[in-house]
Image 1 (cartoon, one colour):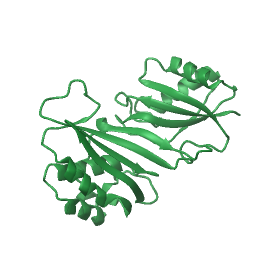
Image 2: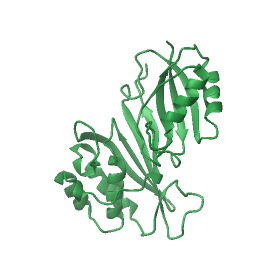
Image 3: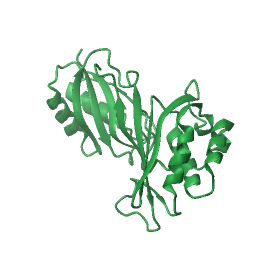
Image 4: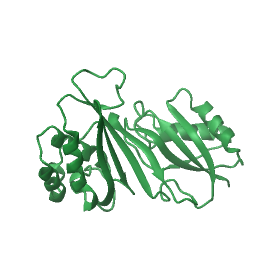
Length: 249
């Protein structure tokens, strides 16, 4: 059967996350309902990352096997029409070979976390960023973040409900930059543990506000103890922005 790769963006605010669940609407369920309608039979998808409740995406990827040999632009438009009014959009549909799997073929996942650092409440950025009123030192945050780049046991930054077989991950990028009141934190790894990004960002905020030193962040990492984690950053500031695949995928 023809297989397609779908690249999506979505506002995660009204969803319980990517994964289909019984306790509320999910991105996967809406997408599968739309695909089932255009395919005229039940259709399942595989996502690249199981984003949590309230987490957004500008570059989530999904793989799907279809019974119809769709022209890619028509598949994109038909699925988008059936997802209205949900805040999900298929940006690109691509034909791929039958070995492609959105989750298991992925080489790396890129996340962005957005902090607005100011006293005034958010109006335009509500549910789009974390408002931090304490003044943050983004340069100190960036320097401290480099201590977590590499292969480590990230148990401290792993949610207690995480189902991964191992807490060891290789973090390839953890960069912090600031433009005006906007602080952007960019991370890259082949895979992340459950709530790892939000746990690390929340702990890094402690460095930026002066409550922790870089050494404290590193000590928390090496403690391999969830109780040593700082604040878990809110979901609203987190975005899955890109998934890397082999060029032949």
